[in-house]
Image (cartoon, rainbow, N blue to C red):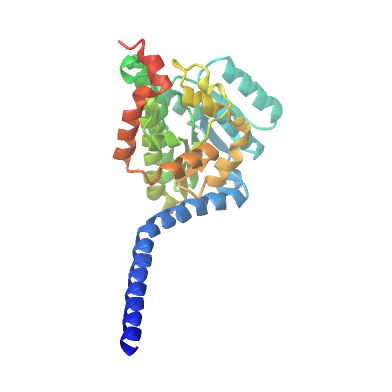
Length: 330
């Protein structure tokens, strides 16, 4: 009887030991996932409950500058800045849309000043000089790099000039403008903020819009690096990744993308974004906005990028968009 008891105890001890090691191993492997989710969600949740900061008071500012401010998100940001009492420089294509936006701003906020800079962010265009000439007499501590567009279709089928213009508008122009105004802030020992409108497209493969995803990856990476370099100087830098927005952004695409068309059915009006964007300033280096952006991030963070890309490459020829556009590929 004693031997049986000892044997049972030994078996129980071994079982308990194995169970304990299983728990330990499970904890070791589960910790990175749990840590990522908690560290990702905490800033997101804080930004939801955080009061919308008054940028005029935060940076003791009189002026702000918004690129792509003629329509969409940029227009909504311009109106939000004006509502906080700031004067605004609106940089956008020199067209009737910009003229109409400027008219609306001046009629809505008659006591404030608004300047428009109509220019094209394309290779070979000296748009930075146009912006410098319009702002040389102004102190502008608040910069929103929002201008951007998308080229769709197979990379090899798109005109090279259009791809390079896409890179200039989405990425290079942000570098030029940010370098100009940040240099002035640093040398003048002034506080301020730089906000980039980016996209979660920069964190996943984006066939049929490869240049767009590449430029957004660049912008988000730049924002993180500048966030580190400038935070101690009182200059806040962040990139926001909105979910689809109801705007002119999708109106002139070369090729319709079925996945994008489906996503746009859940698009929110641009006026819904400025408060969330402003809440991100001074808290996050990166912020995903909206269900699609958050869902894309949380649904793919655990996938090794090579594996994700290879699975995508295997499935791509069977996708409706691929089949449609491949018929005219030459």
